Image (tube, rainbow, N blue to C red):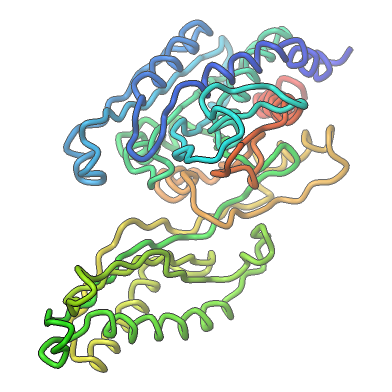
Length: 420
């Protein structure tokens, strides 16, 4: 039996353990917003990594940084986890990173989202695909290497972070900003987000989220002439956004963004709020927008275009408009010819007849590794299913987890030049 076969067998032998581990992990209700039970999740991950021989640090996020990004959530601790295991021989550092916050479960589930069950070869529960199964896979990948007798050459780092679902600024961004992840201590990085075991993801489109508030003046509805209706001022801006949307749809990319319909820039009005009573002319109307950037665009250029639309509406209506930014994420892309991309692609083909890299339609924490830390050898690869992210009755197929774990394990061995 080849070493690669031994690694694969070591993963299969741990099938039940992997499923039980995932179920226990998913049962910790780490919903974001608001960010509840992060400490419990961090302690769970710390314990399992210590048991595996990692040197582990729980990285507490300062209250002032939490207040800066999430002022309404300061009552909830922000705790990230970072563990490193160093082999006896020199070699590269391979870093796995993933987030353990999950979006709120919501209603209408056929299963208890935090009492995960196994049915028809799948594990059901909030976070099974997005993306606790990715963290589980990266941990068990290293377990399998060691079980197959592989001596690590270099080091393995595992980081598990919070708040990705609301920007990642107190999660992976904080670890990068504080120097926990740098070009000097990281050679290869795999962000274990959900794109299924059959493909790697090279990057993502960018995002700009913002509010616009149109101002007017209140009046009684029976004497509307005494006021200025903020809704109608906003209507002028929305009409300009509608025209702008058509312009954005003409901006396409040749990069393999999935699905195909997302290979273009876009803008959506996602929320709108105005009014006090049916007989009061509203003096404020606030709308929320989600602007998506293709990789050739920049956040700054998108801001400038929005400002131009606001200036035009102000000139047309004579009303005041305010812009309030929620968050942004620059587009991110790495080469499919980089070492980590080619290595994972080769090992994926042991399980799938063909594979093509993709680019994510939305943003994720990969941008902090690539754009901020400057680490180009960074891909996204994980067992969860993209179409299962954020949905009711979320699930992940067990075979997907096993396959991704095998690919992670053998790719790590290849990167450390153990199998070659």
